[in-house]
Length: 394
Image (cartoon, rainbow, N blue to C red; front, side, top):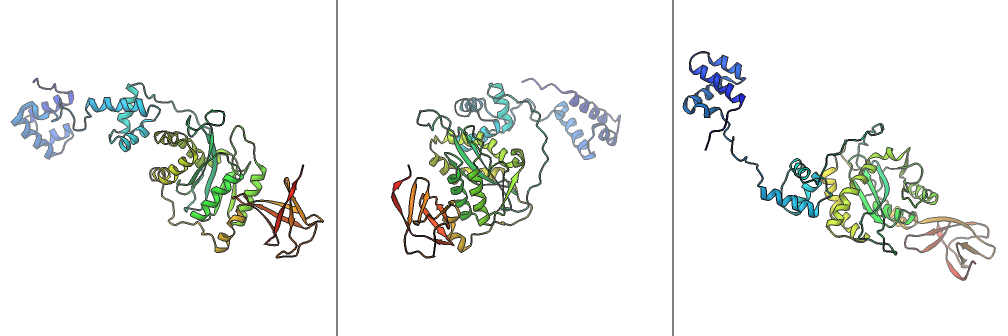
């Protein structure tokens, strides 16, 4: 085997040490010229005296490095990426190769391989519009950013009644202090019932945050192309949060809710691919993936430590727990007719003669439609007895 050719630096080092061996200079001069310590110079002088020019050649020169990945592994990785992870970014693909395939490849190495194989191209950074940075809140539970995002989360695996791929809504809250996903749920829309179901489960599980950050133009941004701002939802949500002493803070723009907006951008990449890998095609299965594994893994990887320790969520009081069905109900006021009936939508409701509280015609009753679709009539804090009349309003 031929000897490795010396580099310019190695030739210079050999020349200095040979001069040192000939007595043409002293150790301190050699150390200065080579930018080495006296101990290193003495050690190198001894090696050159014993081994000749081989002493200045790196021991791994011409050899396969300790971290070299075999070509067979590279070919296997490229095949897997092409077949299963073709639209994954190098970082996410590297994670899945380790997690699913038990193959460890550094993201930068994979980026180079994918680039060579035509599976990845470095994207130019686009100019981003300036938005002032807002400091994170100090405590976990101090502020939740909440929004909904319509997307083809299940790609072509979930179809509508016409057989077309169906967009559904992902409702999500993210803690401002830590960046943790505190809750995420798929639903067919972001109307009153899905939002109330979301927050009813949230406060029962985690407690009441001090505040919720929303888009000022609606209770939260209804951003589906077929949707309009839902004023009823705004009113109903504000009412429910007031009953729970949760402050609703309105953002001036979608960009002001930067953390939740960036979360959805990330989820539209990572979550869509996780759902695909798991071959999930229903909302129920998607919600199970979110609650059992995805949120936990996401938070482990992307969340940060809060500035101050502690959780400032407030537990529901016993009275609040007993009233959650009422708090998260759709509420409307209706006037009592002279015959002690109440008209609500297409039905008449007859009040029974014996009631827990005295009520007269023309007085206003609160109609509560609970999330289980039952109807309850409330007056002065008491629920009234009634029955549904058979006739409907034409």
